[in-house]
Image 1 (cartoon, rainbow, N blue to C red):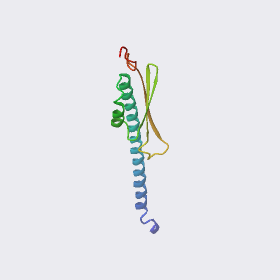
Image 2: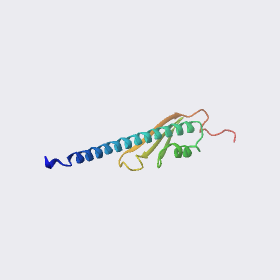
Image 3: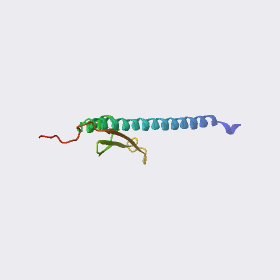
Image 4: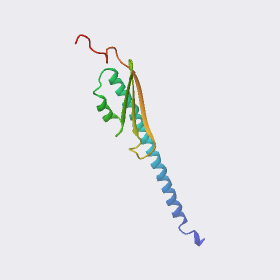
Amino acid sequence: MANDRGAATVEAAIAVAALLLVLGLALTGLRAVADQIRCVDAAREIARLISRGDHGGSAEVLGKIAPAGAVLTVRRDGDSVSVAVEAAALGRLLPGLRLRGSAFAVLEPGVGEPVSGL
């Protein structure tokens, strides 16, 4: 039994380290999920603004709602608009994982059409 001295301390240290690792992974996952939701929210708001004819507010909404470094892609197809917001997960902390949110909206009547008589 003399060789067992300090075994409980080593086991406790390993358990605490494992617990901290699991906690860190859980927090990282929650942050990635929150950033994913921010991408979806930003895409939805930008699609709504563009469908109403407010093209200038897109950059402001992207900066306020989306994660830092997010990239905006807007595609117009006839009387509809598709918006995608893409960002690196946790500011490139998780390589290879890209967060993406997309939204679709139908343009309101008269939006994007040339004004006649001017």
